[in-house]
Image (cartoon, rainbow, N blue to C red; front, side, top):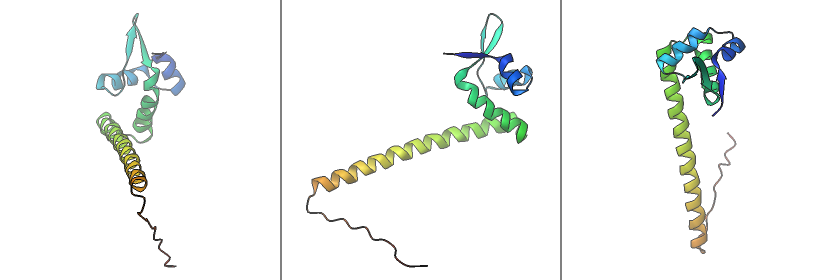
Amino acid sequence: MRYIAIEEFCNHHGVEVTLIREFADFGLVPLHVENNQEFLPDKSITRLERTLRLFRDLEVNKEGIEVILHMRRQLNKLRRQQEKLLNRLQQLENQDLTTRPGTNRFIIEDTDPE
């Protein structure tokens, strides 16, 4: 896993190190400590940037950020499940067409010019 120094991230984004530590203490972002130096896993940079936008731009508090990020994870999970279900439905429909050769399927299009 690759890491970025917390000071480097903060300098680049114009935020105080203490804010990122608060986010870490609250559980919004993981911190890795090595030789008394704090690092952010590169996988968490996008999440931290999203957290900063919510905090600074929209003035959402830490509790609200936690709820928003949780809801976002849930939504993404539901989207992945929906995609799997749609793919499986498509497989079953294709299988049904190939196993029942005499079956005709018609698509009826709405031709009402409203």
